[in-house]
Length: 205
Image (cartoon, rainbow, N blue to C red; front, top):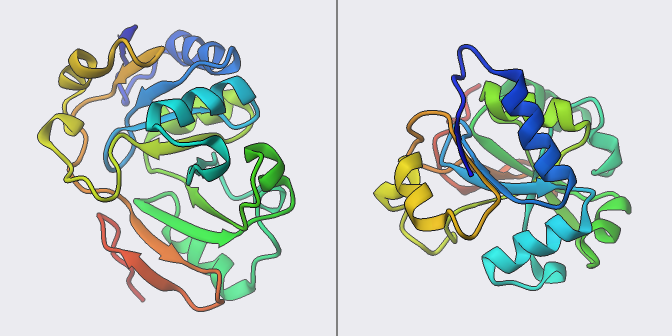
């Protein structure tokens, strides 16, 4: 299924449609403030397994991040965050960053794993934020590509994504052209932010 959503005039009926697909264990491709991403309902085991199958990895080995609507419920997914790190999150989110944090005990249960870290994203994209807000909990997400793969031109074009991946997912949302650069990844697990991958986001003082 392929739908167009205008980020400047969001049709809530299409947001509800996307959420219903997620709640039934579907996986969707959607725009972010970087490249297009693919995700599922974090609390739906069927969806998590489907996302793992899409990436051709075992669920307990999957390195999915989560997209939150805001920072209010972070304590459900991360251990206590030190004040300087929390200030950093508040300064740069929403934005094109993935912050790696120590995972709370809830996270390994969700992924049937011994996952000790979790990537947190809050993209500056109204469509994504509307979906997560309506869903009522985070999405588990990953980029369409592997970190080792070059980000090809088609990752920015929703019609090209549709032609390649329509049979593999339950919904593709066209929210306009995406970027060809991923998020900037910052590891905060040592208490001092460490740049892991430079992407669209730029850390400034």
